Image 1: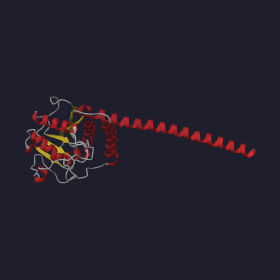
Image 2: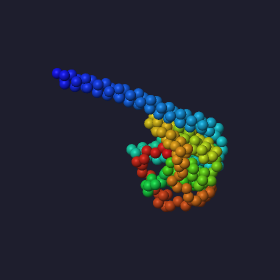
Image 3: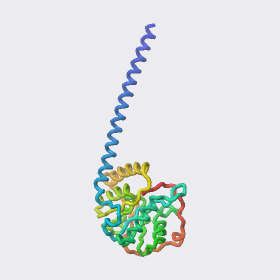
Image 4: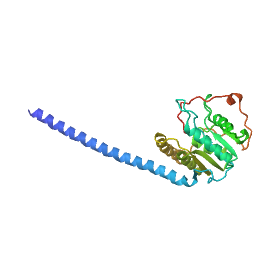
Length: 252
């Protein structure tokens, strides 16, 4: 009987101890969640407040720059449907050009795979809009937003330019440009969707702050200086290439 009573007491003590640990873990998780949320909010607010004055939504108000930097993304979704983010950027770039707000368009995007070439795809669509090929410059190594911005400065020797992308992306791109000492503005084109992409953008801003202020990251490739304007020979296979839907759900 005594042994049974002792076992009951030990069992109750273990249950109480376990309950205490569960309560402590719960409160610790709550505190961690609150601190994480505060951190994300602070980074997001910092990026937004620092860049909002340099974002424009109408062609009439945006300042004139010699070069417009179009940030690339896939033309098609994985299911083969047209990517409306891409379409809006092409529309915005063409509008800037034909309203004499930029003289040259620097198309920066991913070309790591044979059947996936963002700059060439953008070039074809802009030429089909009536833009002369001599006013289009290609950057094949714009793998990330950071790469596109830094290469525009260091490879293409631009100290000022107009970025063309959606507003949420404008903020991060401008934040990087300011860090690099670039005098940039951004045309915020139509944003077709919201939700998951925008939450990903908050995380991308945290990554950008870490890359810039802690890791000092540079583009994957820099290479020799390319002047604007410049002659860029296009390979026949690139001229005739058709972009396939890409597995990377990229917004750059």
